[in-house]
Structures are given as C-alpha cells and as structure tokens.
Image (cartoon, rainbow, N blue to C red; front, side, top):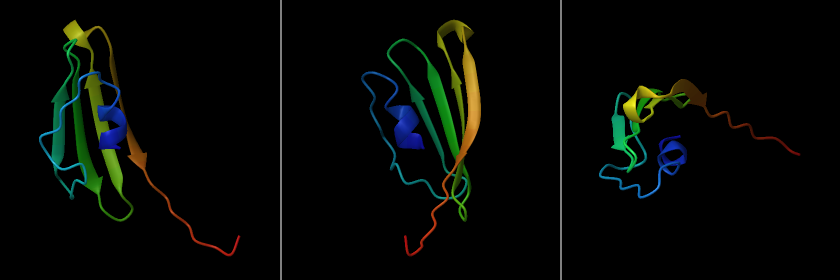
Length: 74
C-alpha cells in the first residue's frame, strides 16, 4: 500500500523500508507540498491505513487497504 500511494507523487524519495511491520509509519511530502501518512495497523491480515492532505489543505483523502490472498485448485 505504501508503495502504491508513494508513487502517486512525482519525485518521490523513500528513506524507510517499504515493508512496514505492525505499528510502523511512513510519511512523505511531495514536490507540490502534499503530505502522506501511512500506518500498518494489522499484520494478519495485512491492513494499512492512509491519509493524504493536499497542498494548503485543498483536499484530503483517507482510507484503508486490506490484502486478501486465497489459494485454490483453479
């Protein structure tokens, strides 16, 4: 999740690993001033919550992402 949102910003630069453990946070700031915050809130299943605030608070969006993996014969 962190990688997906992080690449929305041009000129991104990561200073932390992109495989967060439970409770680890990630913060970034884009060239235009938008801020992004991501936190790993569950390990099994993996859940990440995110919050993005645009420059000068022009917009915000937030949510969460949960990965579900299923194995089967098909």
